[in-house]
View 1 (cartoon, rainbow, N blue to C red):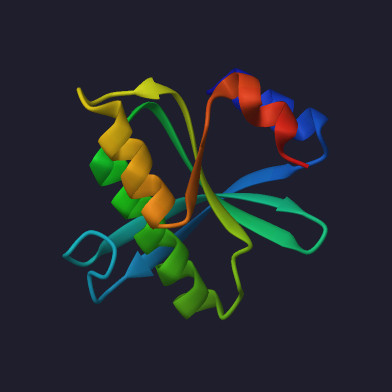
View 2: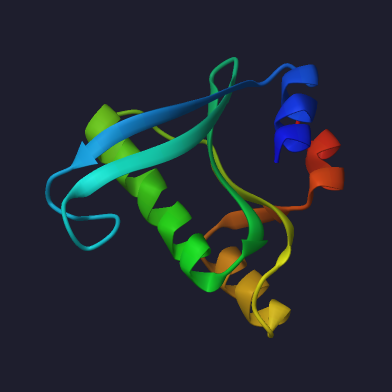
Length: 116
């Protein structure tokens, strides 16, 4: 994922991580610290889930991280993306369909250059 982060920085994105405590357990179902990767460029804020092998659970977690961030920070997130080298479950179509139904764009490292 370091290469992906480097490409994002080259494209002018600020890449960072925010840690917020979820006392209600909204994201994981129990109170915990939630680490969210953010991409910021101008007024756009994107929640990014970076995974070597994307699974359905990662997709659902990414959506909850977006919602949690918006609730706590009071800021609107422009998009949610999942950056992954490959789909880590047997049925890739189901994972991609779930992501699409939740409004999450799945991006492979070579597709990062399309993020503008």
